[in-house]
Length: 92
Image (tube, rainbow, N blue to C red; front, side, top):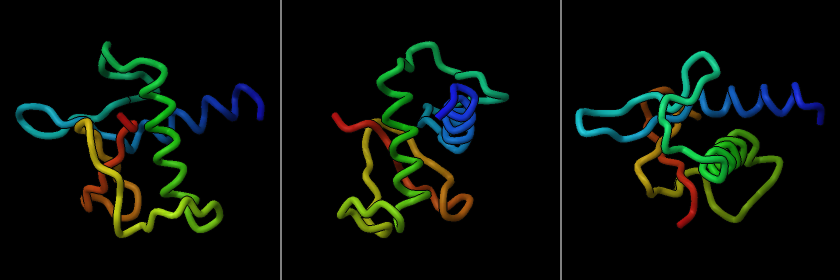
């Protein structure tokens, strides 16, 4: 994959992720920029991996069904239905 392709996948994946805040949910990224200074590369990779797993799950089965999304760390994704609130986060 070219660097441009990787950047595209990361930006598109983070664009659908949200982080739980005291007053609701906030976008993880906007216009290609990460909105939180405490999100490091390992978290970005885990979020992108989670979004790709859900998006391409039928092609790359992981043993986890779509009806049982992984939850933790206060992140969620809008994949498979806006507002459905599938939660995706890095594994602890």
